[in-house]
Image (tube, rainbow over all chains, first blue to last red; front, side):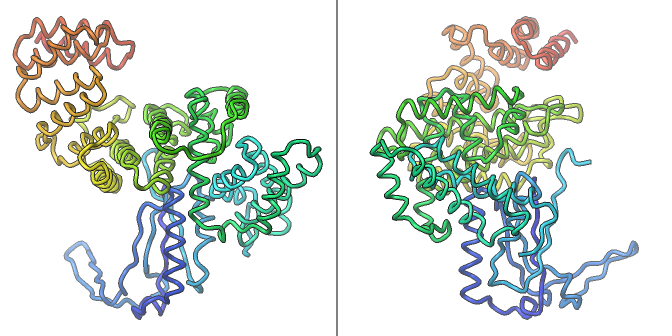
Amino acid sequence: MRFVVFRKADDFTEAGAMPSRELVTAMLAYNRRMIDTGVLLDGMGLKPSREGVRVLFDGTGTSVVDGPFTESKELVAGFSLLQTRTREEALEWLRRWPAEDAPVRLELRQVIEEGDA
Amino acid sequence: MSAVPDTHRAIDAVWRIESARLIAGLARIVRDVGLAEDLAQEALVAALEQWPEAGIPDNPGAWLMATAKHRAIDGIRHEQMADRKREEIAHEMDVIHEPDLDAQADDDIGDDLLTLIFTACHPVLNTEGRIALTLRLVGSLTTPEIARAFVVPEKTMAQRIVRAKKTLKTAGVSFETPHGEERDERLASVLEVVYAIFNEGYSATAGDDWMRPALTEDALRLGRILAGLAPTEPEVHGLMALMEIQASRAKARTDADGVPILLLDQDRSRWDQLLIRRGLAALERAEDLAAGHPGPYTLQAAIAACHARAREPGDTDWDRIALLYANLATRTGSPVVELNRAVAVGMARGPEAGLELVEQLVAGGDLEGYHLLPSVRGDLLAKLGRDDEARAEFERAAAMTANQRERALLLERVAETDR
């Protein structure tokens, strides 16, 4: 089964600040472990929402809204795609997220796959 | 550490992540894979006893390793130190005090893990034993899980694993990574085991227990682990590419009733683009490393890639596929590969050219009794408008196959030639 891990945005990521060297090192080591265990399929970090746009369809037409977006807690700053045998295993990987990134909010979501009701 | 609602399930997850490294590290010390697994299991039991009360430690892998090593030392102290080997081991244990899995150089753990894979796939074991042991020790599956996936009673699978471990012990298989020529042979055995696991899962059908198709994911995971441990081996990446590309078609290869859909009839929008992308990247690595001499897995992956790259069946580069099959036939000397080449040649240069190759195969007699020979021959004849001959071939093929669905397809073709 596959899971997406969302790393939620915060003031820091929304400001577009560069992560510390310690965090980068820890993050690389963390990802390396998941690659070596065959778990990490894909992942990327996203630029701040001020560089993003929203496209809204209301049924009659479309409107394009430029970022930044205010509700920063609901925004996403990056994601990883994991493949694990169980949900608990994915959760266990989340528990191992680098402490250097704290405080951080992560969200685990299962990918819909063939055979899911 | 935050409270976990179901500690047992969390421990199960820790086990899946840590057990292969744990067993590998222990096997290097005690030089016995079976004993290493027993020690790891004892540590797991201790975790199940202690963690629900004490909470999951910050570094669960290191905790399990330390616990397992203490058990090993206790075990050695309790038994008579008759054996010299035991003394050596005891000495080594004292040297490696307070072990920390994460502090240990990643290279060392990687080496141990690679050795564990080589050992589980050792040629002294039969294929069944290799597969079971690899899934158990490296894939971190439980015995009941493996039994379910292979549709055998749990007891049978347990015995198979015990027997395999015993065989390794009696044969005196040392816990070492092979070198030189032996390494190539042993690596071939490892790749064979991984691909066998993949195919076991891939051949599962809709009505099967989900544990069976899950084997493809287990094989992909084993392959990815292997690719990390042996990054310079072209065939490791070749196999990885082949598996990823084949897996990319999983959703498209059967209809709602589980009836297989032929490659050229599949809805390509249902192919998994992420797996294709990963497969093509792995193929590129394999081809770079192979430096002009691609092995069988890399060649098969290259063929699969020709299909993956084609947006429509009509875009398929059949010339290249025919060339790759020719190369593969030279490498393997397999008449089945030659038959596939005939199909590709038939697509690339017309049914006449394909039929010419098929006639050579018929004359060679190597594929006598193989239903796909008359089936392919019939297809080429039908394309040439030689309907009577085609019908006879389809009828022959239908009589030869044991597979009901295939027979139905062939009889359908018989009916078509009558129209």
